[in-house]
Image (cartoon, rainbow over all chains, first blue to last red):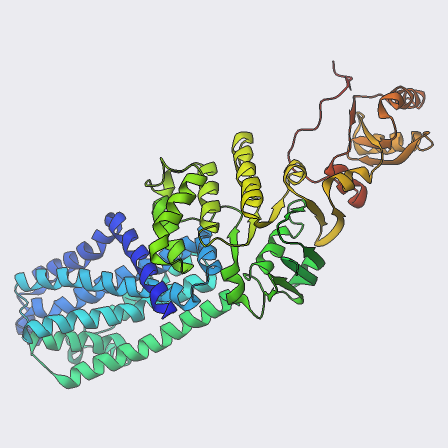
Length: 253
Length: 328
């Protein structure tokens, strides 16, 4: 109960920061949409003939969403290191609030931010012609998947921030974004990949998040694809969030 | 039961930094206790252990009868803390920061507004309360930090170098708040400082810390009286070597209780210092040691520190004006 109470108020504080520094957040929406439009504009006309994807807007939309999630959540570690460097984190640790809430507050705020930005990105995608085969509930499901993936992704930056207290190191989350997203069927279905890339994509958990989200947009309710997506997120989150909790324990020991 | 108690409190950082080396404390309720020492003497490390941010390597400490290691969560409810370099969040307003602080300390919702308004008034931040902390001056940040430490009406407050980096006016303001807090609300205050004047003005009792150990403890008056003499400082040209020669020349001076050379000066502790100055200068002149400056002062806590450790507290404070200066 105490944890929930403190988490709620710490989440509000993080969200207030977001609203007060909109310039940082605009990039989190603008950059994924920029890539979405130039990619679709560049090869959208030939993907049907090249690898049998006629609706390339729908094919690309999950990439824009996940790119937005990664960018949004990468700044979370930065926020944490700012608190640590300024000494505000010490002030929070001195309070009787359960220490888990110091991390949960930020994670909850990340999930809210991610879901808000994803709503914008998906809405723009639909207007651009991506469609949403799974309908309104599918739209909601896409946003929830993005929120959950955001929780898992924030764990990268937060664990590094808590372990090192270094702003630069916590940006690693943003660097990891390139291999994680582009070693997945981001630009084309993995069936057309070279053998080595197909292998890497198969073991990359983000691949299943991409495919699950894509199934909602292009096909409707494919329960198997969704189950794989959720399992991948759960596995990914288990790793990053345990690292975060371990780093929190170490810092507060 | 003492408000703050420590027994053989020790913190070592690997590989071989002995930050705090067996400190004993017993601070009664309602006292302002000054923890005086130069940078790196272990003041902050001690505060971080007493406030549950750091686990002691060995020894133990209690605040309000609660063990800081075993009952850390309970200790945190009892204490208010303002750490060095006021740790604040730039993009909240002062009022928002205090509200959040009150929420985290579990102040009942119905009381938060009146408590926050009251504190803002106490630290004179009415005009700035709704501006972002980013826009605050150093002194305003310290005042807000002090208010943040008090949202839950703690009985014991830790202030780690509350005035470092402030100008003299800002320092006076903080001193006034600290005095008021102690006198009106009976709050026990543990204050670290590198300014002997601060310890002298505020503290009922002082512990002087050097290299992780307490080297002297008592009321400022007692400590200064323990020197039992005036302090004559003679600065000589030619650095430490010349100062050592001067120390030698003055060795057999009548009435001197202690003589030591520090950097380019000789410090002589002597009864009736004003009468002794002529004799001191004469002796130095006989030994062909020129004199650059002679200062006469009542003993300060820095002299206590000097006597115990052989070096000054580097505080950057102005020394008293010289009674004679060879440069004039």
